[in-house]
Length: 110
Image: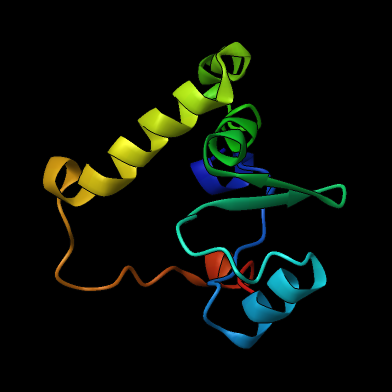
């Protein structure tokens, strides 16, 4: 069985700048967020920054081990999140071209 066949489609995605993303932000009254790059909405609850990342990680088989970090105080987790967000391109690089997802992934974008 190949990787795609084993992966569950657990998430839908949207950029906050497109109509679908703007509508979601408005529906959850979070349209004024300026500094949050990751937002998770699950069961009508909004998770931001480190809460979003850790709740996503617990649903991904190779990243579940990060979830216990949720027990650290949010101000510490979000401080680390902000440092990583600020330096991510310097540390991990930046692509010259946008990633073009295959059809299987594209269908999950709103």
